[in-house]
Image (tube, rainbow, N blue to C red):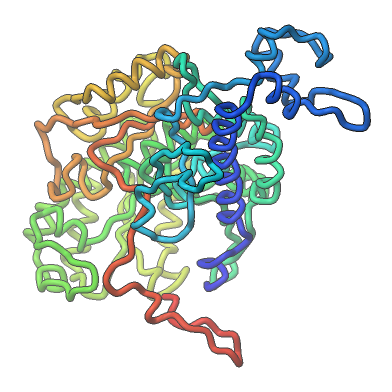
Length: 501
């Protein structure tokens, strides 16, 4: 467990190194272009080595994109040299941030370039948490080394001063990024306490990215289990976020279609959706959550019904897995299962795997097996050819239950820019709170009649999606007053880790 939760195979370290190499390349390129002539830049970018001067393969590819079909550095005109050496990045449009895998709130806004050696080229920037890097999303969606290289190259990091996108490929860093990621692309094989094989691979941020495990792990697992075997794969948050993104983004990337959806519910969560008191992390639960209260459960099942309805939009059968706590009464458990089945679930099964291990989930497995034999009529929620705004509206209305959407001027401007740049046909990855179907975390149950505000729209072109921001979305967590590091220690004799969980 400690290995799993610490460094494991170093995937996050590889992503951090690759991400920050690209960030360093952006600022260094701006500095060098601002302080050198075209001729000096050209001599440094295409140096004479052992009496020979030649373009690297990635530089030849850039020349071809510019429409310059020459391979001899001596034959370029002054105008062609200028086009080749100058990316003309507009610093105000840089979207690529540095990352670190530590919750550090003081890195949410920083200033870079303050040393005298950077010659006054100062700009405001920020750090994100490592899993928020687009490279993590690419790792989760890629299907091969070649595909990963192409996706890394397509990552848009900024615009030039003419409003055109600047990519990692333009900076010449794609090959180096691929080298840093060559081992991270391989899933890690682990096992449960009972010996069931498990692939652990990728962890894209479940808000600004899609929050699903990797396509490669799914495909390798399917190959290993054979035609009659079963692969269980994670889809992040509830049906409104994790599953919707799984279907509309991941299934499009993988070409795979799930046989059945397992929707996990708890009596406690449903009581909260039924109007139960607020829950504060670390504080004792109120009695409403630990004592039988059938009315709260019944009221909260409206949220479960909505989650089942969302699943049905995609034409895949759904089995509800009720994760049973020791304080749940048999009447509460029976009520949830009854309502779930009446609401269209193929089956609803109480599960005790937390206390009983695999034995506690045998009935769930049997229900899933039966459901998987049903005919599916899988369909995507929207066509990629629809305009960006229309795709956002379909998700907001059909999945969240919003009356409509409202884009800020900044969001509309970004939509227009991405459409103009040719990115309009990408799927949508909504960055929204997971605590409510709406954009307001405190609104439980099934909110209706609300207008979903889109504050900004950003793009992960390499990963292959547009992500609208619903309200504000923090990409760098902070430490609380009492961080868990107070309880973590290492026994110097046995090397046993204590207090990690």
